[in-house]
Image 1 (cartoon, rainbow, N blue to C red):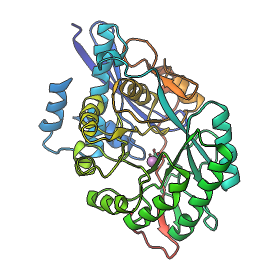
Image 2: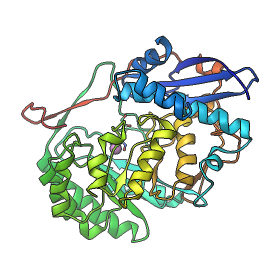
Image 3: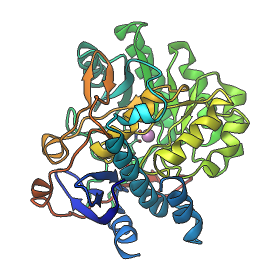
Length: 392
Ligand code: EZ4
Ligand code: CO
């Protein structure tokens, strides 16, 4: 067996910041793990630099005394993913084979269609449909609001962390609740019945407001309504459930099974969005998925651009293997990012496949990474029209 000889942290900004852990062995084999936490990249880099598989995971989780939290769990995830990568390379198998093999032929992904108004969003969705996507997230600018989170300026590349200091966006729940049903009504009429349509509320609503939106969207049969309300109060989701049959997805900001225990156990959600990098790696994500399977909850891993190709590769092996898979978010990375992280995964006909290379099938070009030093960038904050910061 190869012996671990060292580990290093690579911080690079090929269009956006990424933190990558590289664990090296005495036989030239190495493993990679994504450790990127949007807007707090350097905190995780420091956690890894300054201070499994199952036993190492337990050692890092229990041994640190301070359990959970996004920084700790992203750092653990990077170690966990890199070790799975090494183990699969030793076995000479793509990671999904070590996870039990493929449960399906490909991983259905959803793309992001967005635009300043409804027409532009539907145009973008048609473009995705023509490229073969079977599932599309719709986000549109809201009439009367200058900008909206989740609506990019670029056609394909979306990066919400855009300010050296946090930008402040204005929000109106009333305007938003009026505009989304109209977006879905028109989108369903134009795009037809055969495409899955998704929407992300980015934690902007109260439970009863979310119940209203879910009900208003029911005629257009959305695949899911994501992050309807902040989830610190898991019991709040019961109110949403009482008012709508629109499926609910939540969990991109969760970092532990404890963040979603009640949501899953009480069947208050339909899709759990925890992903490899922010929820403790492959090892912990499998635990969440198995628990979810017992309660008819499927997976729907977060896959925005701030999750590096290393995370995407690992997520695809997980998605291919897990029985209760639902859908995988997929926002393509910039050409600069793809050049820093050469990868075996590929898109065809609405599905991603992780490829057959041993390990997770994603590499890092350290010389290319060194060309892009870290640049500070923070996520925006939201205020209501009167200046209030409500419940997000
Ligand atoms: O806001 O990845 O569903 N996807 C999303 C993303 C997240 C960002 C946060 O870093 O909501 O756009
Ligand atoms: Co989201």
